[in-house]
Amino acid sequence: MNIQSHYSLKEHNSFGVDANTDWWIAFDSEEDLLSLSKDEFFASLSFVVIGEGTNLLFIDDYHGAVLSSQISSIEEGEREGAFQYVRAGSGIVWDDFVADMLQRGFYGIENLSAIPGTVGASAVQNIGAYGAEVSQIISAVETVDLHNGEKHTFTHEECAFAYRKSLFKQPEMASHVVTHVTYRLSREPQLNLSYAALKQTFEGKNPTPLEVRQAVRSIRSAKLPDHHEYPNAGSFFMNPVVEAALAETMLKAYPEMPHYPAKDGVKLSAAWLIDQSGLKGIRHGAVGTWPKQPLVIVNYEQASGREIADFAQFVVDTVKKKFAITLHPEVRYIQ
Image 1 (cartoon, rainbow, N blue to C red):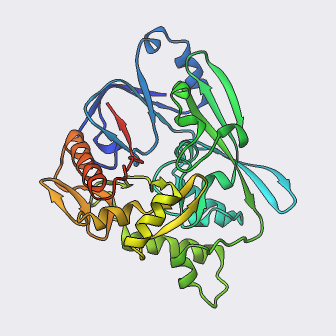
Image 2 (image 1 turned 90 degrees about the horizontal axis):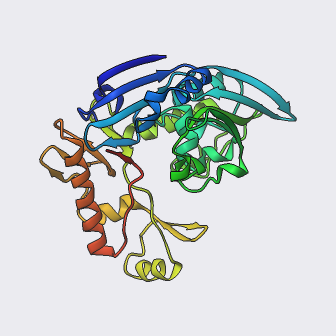
């Protein structure tokens, strides 16, 4: 376990915000977390757990402890017919895990290639892209509760997955730290080409899972900026779900509006709403939207976390004024 005080977080958030934390704690095992749960000084601190910092925004310095998982074990578990269970440590870089699984001949994860973050964050956020969500392949999630040192294993059903949501994002779960995630992968290719760009790319072809991964990576790189070059956190806002009646009214005015069926109504494209509000490629000082994908907010010139948050609020206010729809951040604010 690596513990440091007065630690810079600039290299631990993809916005490149120059924030600091009172304490930085990189843990390597469940045992490290059990030790922290018994430490009286740690018990007096507020704390937050981060992965690679690719889906969060530090508004100010963080007064407390920032925890980061370094658990990197991978265990092949039971086989169940054509399926293979794999237990992975929460600190593994997500795209490295995807590449490793394909190399081992375990499939069903290729559509989620190139998503920034870690294995632990994949479960917390219920990451999704190109017609797939990670909840479709998660079997169980293990945590340690830092309030009492108890270990817990949550089944797929108990994780309460929904669009960009899970049990682990609920306030009452704030003391739970994800240590391992078990995935149910296929030993036989089961390609998901439902996403329009993938369908178009492979029309009339029979691609391999590796080719699908390569296509996903290519599509993402063409639309989304590399956060190492242009600091960003990927998609900043969630796609809003509206009532069917509102969607029908909007379609009369905007027949070309992207829309998709959703559990509680109709899902609209946040990127389209932002674009139609005249905000594609717009900049306010050091912050702006990406010209090729307005859903992405970029820190162009070392803006503070508060400046980025203020710009995001400007986007929310502008879209709401035009469409009477409120966008909600997918990015997590920490202060």
